Amino acid sequence: MPTSDTAEVVILGAGIAGCALADHLARRRVGPVVVYDPRIPAAGASGRAAGIVTEQLWNAWDVAVTRESKEEYAALARQRDPSAYSVNGFARWTVQAEAERVLDRAIEQLHAWNVDVRRLDRDELATRVPWGRFGDVRAAIWSPTDAVVTPSAMTEMYAERARAAGVEFWLGVPFGKLRRSEGRWAVEAGGRTVRAPRVVVAAGAWTKRILKEIGRPVPLAPYRTQAAVLRPSPPVPEFPSVHDIDTDVYVRPESAGRILAGDGTELVEVDPEQFRTGGDAAFETHLAESFLTRFPGWAEAELVRSWAGVCCSTPDRRPLVGPLPDAAGCFVLAGFNGFGVMRAGGVARRLAELLAAGEGDRTALELLAPVLPARFPSDLPPFLPRPGFTLEGGRDPRF
Ligand SMILES: Cc1cc2nc3c(=O)[nH]c(=O)nc-3n(C[C@H](O)[C@H](O)[C@H](O)COP(=O)(O)OP(=O)(O)OC[C@H]3O[C@@H](n4cnc5c(N)ncnc54)[C@H](O)[C@@H]3O)c2cc1C
Image 1 (cartoon, rainbow, N blue to C red):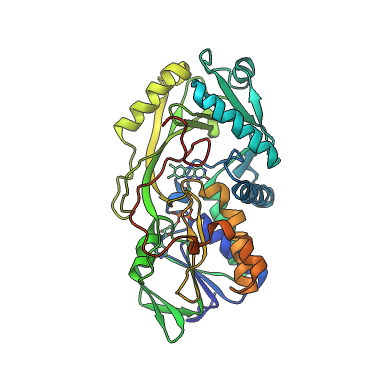
Image 2: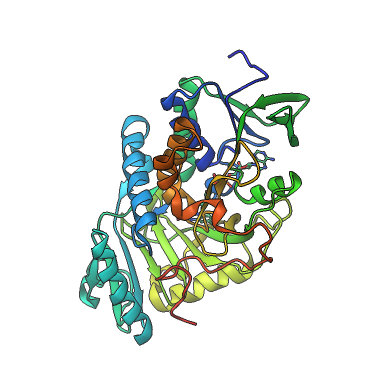
């Protein structure tokens, strides 16, 4: 494909968010779009994620974008790779009385947002997850329409469709600089410069540094989170994704009877260029210990591999999406707080509508109202990453 040194929109970052945005922009015919990434699609968090997609969230906006994403992923998978999307349901439980009360309130709230969710008793939980031990569980919640996706496959499918519609992917050359010159944004990388009136920084954990370097700091805190694939014996048949609210351990089915497990957020900021990419012994021990009580048959499962990725927290645990105040033509698409796979499609669709309609379009802006960067002052003090998989948006019932 011929390349050009100008575009209408340059997207920085070929994770699931940047690739979904490229696809949506291509379908809206906004003009030439270039996606730049110093690596390859899904080289960041998107290629390391578990891929759980759940509507068990804590506000109506997040539920809506996750539902939109889910529909989009199901359709994309049907078209290109059916194995990348499967509806398997999602169960969570707790042994704590206080968490049980929060869980009941959460169910009430989720019903108000038309989320298909209900309580499960111990017997039903044991029927759905027969190799678990749930004798001490006080309460469980079940959403039958939740799904799992293969995040790298979804990212690639968006990229393929965008490329087929004319988007240029400019990959694998080192980043130089983002700068403003003569009323346009200039992206310099690998000896080439591409200029565009609009740039979208969708660079996951790297977004913070890129925007700081152009003098537009945003409140993002990159943090490390880990996961592992294990091979239990005998292999496990297809099962719902599960999350133990008390230990923060989640498990989803993997291909060939294996399982994928993880355990939440490390509450310190890390540099995405310099983090430990392998799983820690402490993480692997935490998984094995939690299996010992909850899934005794899995405690001896063979560890196939364990790894870490870097996600990006915001002070209110909501994404950071839309135009940056005082930086004409510069947009951000980041801050997914560990839930970016499940929300990327819907969020990218909304941002594409804004880019197609024009920054001043109030209807399109309204679709992003709760997550616009303008909600934070520019001089916000530093903050620590917040816990991920809580029942009610960061107000963790355990503390
Ligand atoms: C272990 C783990 C488990 C997870 N499980 C889930 C889950 O079950 N469900 C869920 O919804 N989410 C999950 N997540 C979170 C999810 O992975 C992220 O929220 C999501 O992938 C973010 O996508 P992104 O496109 O914003 O960022 P990324 O995928 O990180 O992409 C950012 C891209 O920017 C590129 N980049 C870096 N520097 C530059 C530059 N200067 N210019 C241009 N590009 C640059 C990087 O190379 C990278 O490709 C998990 C994450 C991890 C690590």
